[in-house]
Length: 310
Image (tube, rainbow, N blue to C red; front, side, top):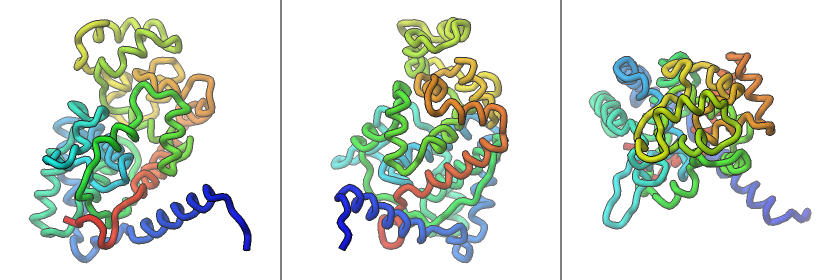
């Protein structure tokens, strides 16, 4: 019998388990039990984004923050209990992550049509897809059939969610741990073409980093003083903050990224060529972003008898 390193066997086992989980997901999972599901979610999200385009960015981020912590299981929605410190108050989420009330609104509409049928994890996945397309980005087929977690973990969120201070090697490592490669990392980071960030997140970059356009740094320092103003907001992509396009990558090439972790993608490193590609080829970005979002949605879903479905 062939002999393999223990690490190889562990990776192989994880791959088999991931494949088995994905096999239980299907775009037609609710075809008979909740046939109008996608149109219901789309209708709610269309109203939400029309009223507040920024909320579209928040729903994309909510999906990412859910999937990056123990998989796409809606654990990010769980409140703390006397015996559980949940993810809402983790460093990357507290007073920052938004969209909980949007999920509640979608859930209410879906429950009226299909009681105790659709998981919140699937609703978050659908809402993220619709947010992207409603803001002018690509669409894709969402795999469905996830079940919801019964527990959440603040510690896991703190350990897994990449902060704005991460360098490229750390980002690559954290994404690789989720089965996502450099192309996925670079494409998914393009979600920062919409949304905003707090002064406390970008202050170190505009004041201390060398790879920042001086004029851009001066401009952002007006909104973000050295002391105070931590909650002041600036758009991640000032060119078209409410439009899902490739201007984010053009900002990176001009050294006008708002966050340190974003500028790391274009800093004489391995992601530079992908940034150049996406900056000039919206079709390539749309294809790679959609593919990466499908991969993101396949991270360790609870299926079958695991978790809860409603």
